[in-house]
Length: 361
Image 1 (tube, helix red, strand yellow):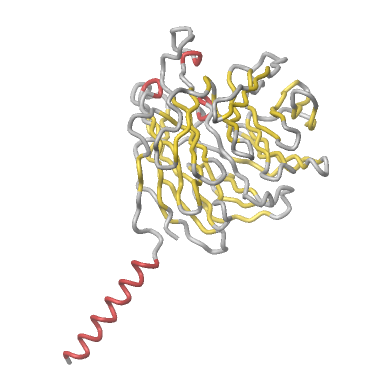
Image 2 (cartoon, rainbow, N blue to C red):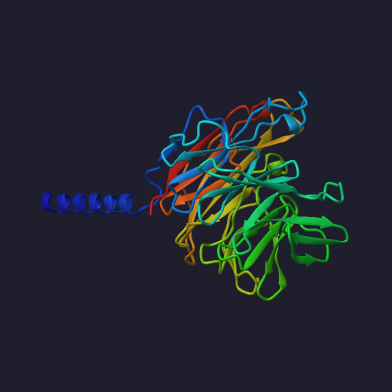
């Protein structure tokens, strides 16, 4: 009898240990990168050794002194992956789009200007973004195409929109396009979307054709675009994109012909991004609540980061706990870590922090 009891206990212990070791839900490990940097929009370089980001808050030098966005600080900085500051002074007073493919320069923009900013502090390349319509349709966001060694942006000139560089026209679209312009890693495709109420469109530079991948939610917060965070849906092989459409997490080919629903994630989710190896997708869920100082407006806090395998039938698992703050930017630092921001419900973006989270595999 004792032998049977011991054998049963041993079996239960073995099963329990196996379940603990094999479940991806434990342990959760979140690391604050810097307590001093009031910052958001972390974007790692290709090997994950460096993280560019934007310091924020109110009181920008040269602002109007009021409550308009001209007073919002946007100071581009770089840190090492462990949170050690690489730049002590801001590289540029601008918003951050990303890195050039060689990792030597940062693509930045603000107030209808673009900047190519060397991390090493050499001469900055700059230029104007025409805003010919002078309407809300205009987009100041900029990306970069290394194949033509040039910044690229969306020119919403009614009745057509143009994907434009300083020297040439890339493509025309019979209608208005959004603010975000995101080339694929191999630069064959250019994804375009608006920050709200949008469809995800993809232009194929080789075939000179447009594809509409359907409705997309980048972030459920309608104010997400105000401080110009970034998002990138491309897999590293440029053969697929991932995004949230309605309540579904989707993987699609650039032409939209091969589309798969990975999971149902609800209608309060966003920021879907694929891992560097293409095996996982991370995304965020939120809970809306009234803002502290404006009860008539929503704050999208209660943020949780999730990861799911791209294999059919996989189940999502959380890699962070639920947090009161919101997240505006989510990226993979490497195949086992996420880097993201957390922005509190405070006036004038006065508390924003950068974090890392371990992704159990």
